[in-house]
Image 1 (cartoon, rainbow, N blue to C red):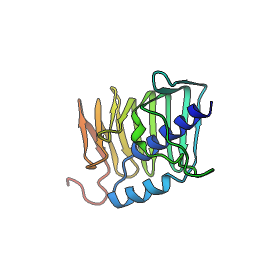
Image 2: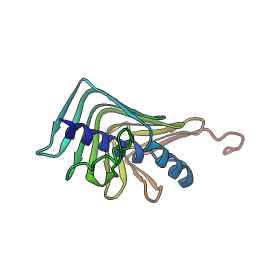
Image 3: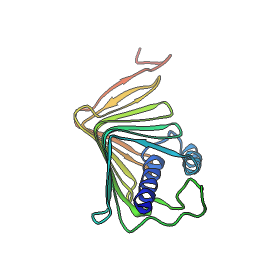
Length: 183
């Protein structure tokens, strides 16, 4: 029974560390290293772990919190390969693992990811560890940054490696220009 719980900790740590883009790469490195030490709290109505098919799925009212990052969705399914690594020490909080056993993480239904001053919303969010790309999709997918504005599209791709964000499909933006605008 300990193996599925260790798997869950590893996959959720990876999810929280990598899906949330930061404004600056230096800040990103600082947040990523401190996130490994923070505890993760996950709540849902049910949990299914299938080690034979290599997934763990939280179902119903899912809420995952690590530090200032909060992920809310109807379902959160984590696909992995191999088995989680042993912890490096009791109570280390990072499960002694990196994210290379995680293949893909899929959040579906009313997905909301909040971090720093940013809110990302979509019908579905898919993160793949191999290329470090998060894809938000659905007719009302959008990213809102406090005091900056909102950009929406039916597909939003966030490349964690390069920091590039691509908006596709009926893209709309609402911006708060501050003192300087078009006038």
